[in-house]
Image (tube, rainbow, N blue to C red; front, side, top):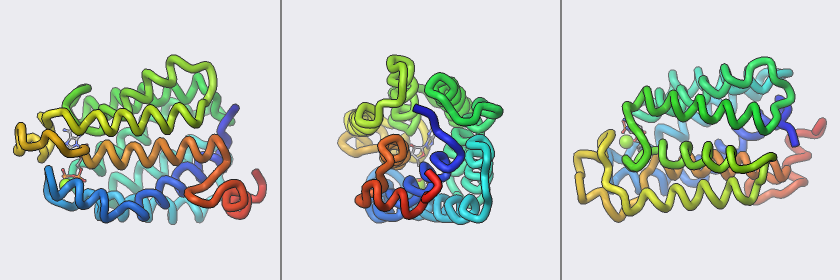
Length: 221
Ligand code: ADP
Ligand code: MG
């Protein structure tokens, strides 16, 4: 299985749909162990990114990812803008020249993305941040020979859920110290939606819409 430029556009569009649909939930999570802006931040950034990429006619997935990265960096305030922006930018650079995108290239790209997030946030695994979801995805992709939609969604969800028992040591949540335990990390929840969206693209489904929705949005696919 391979991802063409339209699939990558769909990935960002469906991510945006999940984030818009769960904006309040993401905000609630950030109210518990942060300042309550994560839903607003992500909804603004992904809305702008989806609008930006809808205007173009892409032939390369890397270009879609680059425009997404730039938009996220400029439109999202707070810690998460540069972090998600870096993730998509590193992914974009790593997959440049590979169209359509195969599993091996995507795996390498994800690894670069995680390294970028870690460097940006000076964070590593187990610190209750989005690193915990993205890093789990790298481990998963390395174990598989091809895109496995069900496993991607399942593993991303499990990784997000595992942040509940962690103590935050990075970002605003770190101020809550042990009181951060018992809550899902907001950035990990957003990351889960992004990988659920990727799984939907692989299965050619859209959020709650199935194949018909996907075909209506992307008739050429
Ligand atoms: P802010 O913390 O500035 O209010 P957001 O609320 O939008 O920004 O994003 C918070 C999320 O960003 C956290 O849930 C966490 O996943 C992630 N995060 C914050 N700081 C770091 C960091 N230093 N390294 C990695 N991820 C981080
Ligand atoms: Mg916040």
